[in-house]
Image 1 (cartoon, rainbow, N blue to C red):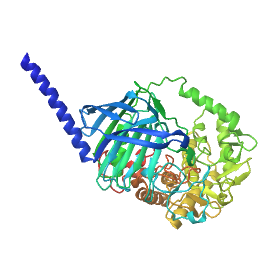
Image 2 (image 1 turned 45 degrees about the vertical axis):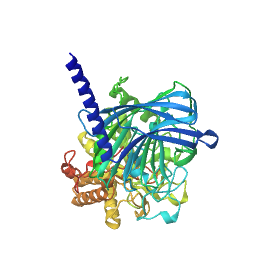
Image 3 (image 1 turned 180 degrees about the vertical axis):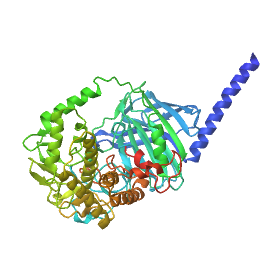
Image 4 (image 1 turned 60 degrees about the horizontal axis):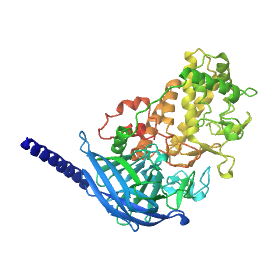
Length: 560
């Protein structure tokens, strides 16, 4: 019995040492140190940081450290759980407990310090930052459009609005985010200089609410990722198109016995390209999420009937015969082609067995053609009252004729899908509809042949690129494939292949998808992901294989 006890103690000790060495080696390989910090703020100065005390954590399976501040003493207990199936993954739970004194106007945090950090690192915060939003930026009130002639042109760099971002130049560089503003509370990066990647995922919140999640770059070449609780953004927070709104966050006043728990998972992996980061993210994104428990309240058919009834009663304008995209309180809620619904919402309505709905859809086509085509050959951007057509955003003189190119791409794609559905349902496709639609496809050909890009905004009068540099036309290759088949035109397919490849090479392969919304400048977005020609889909490699020209996998995985 005594020997068994000794053997058990030895095995436990050996496993602990082995686990500690494995995690320590993994962190060392990826130049990572973890620290715990106590942060104090001055609320009178809008949460200006007054003091930050950081202690480097010891890499142990179970670790209890004492952390002392000016007025308090903390016990910080960390538990490491290396994955039994993946040597590159570690689960960690850190518990801060105030054991003596008090800590006012404070937060606690876990800091991840990566050395050998460079500005070339591709940083991803799901739905909040891609490439760290490291682009030229302009502070322009919503709805932002470029307003300086020096920024406008087909060959200007990507310019984004005033969103949280890392510095494109030298100097202070930091993103302050909250876990609730992300698609998933996570930060990941790909280091091209080291061919390594990291992904840190935490839970949505704890007893103190959303976490603060920051990314910061130091002058000495370190990258700092922080998970803090409670959420405290220093001085400023982000609010639509403005990254300088006064911080409303409330630091905590901790007393003896108060606890803060932060749980997270670290993935450290070899990363030969940006795609590796996205592949890891999509494989791991639900790891810390609670199991979904969805209780359907209504059937899909009942939901469809409700929406159909609403559209016929409230959106359809019988005197002109079209479905408005909203309640028509202004021109942007009256008619916009593509994007916000014009000639997209008619597609699901066309599946209806309600004769009145089908009549309304057909009327919508009769109303759009030929009056909805601008002099450029593209669709008019927007309009109102049934007979007023606009080339762009009429609220600003500079953008009056700026047509968001994705709008015509959306419309071309969905209109041809509706032509195909109409033929299946024995609905006559009028020659006028086909003529106008083919004219839009021809306009895309002219645009590509002249400019070698689809741009972000084009002139509704001439069809020339006004603002370039985006994947706003990401849907266009798919639309041209449909047009090629429908109109039996090989040139459409050729332009589809060429344009898709170029957008992939220039943007998607670099982890950039931007320019889809008309009210977000060229911010990375989920609306402009590339749709490659269907004839090239078979070129997709198996997951984990290296990326080569023509590999479209990132286009399908990076739209978050």
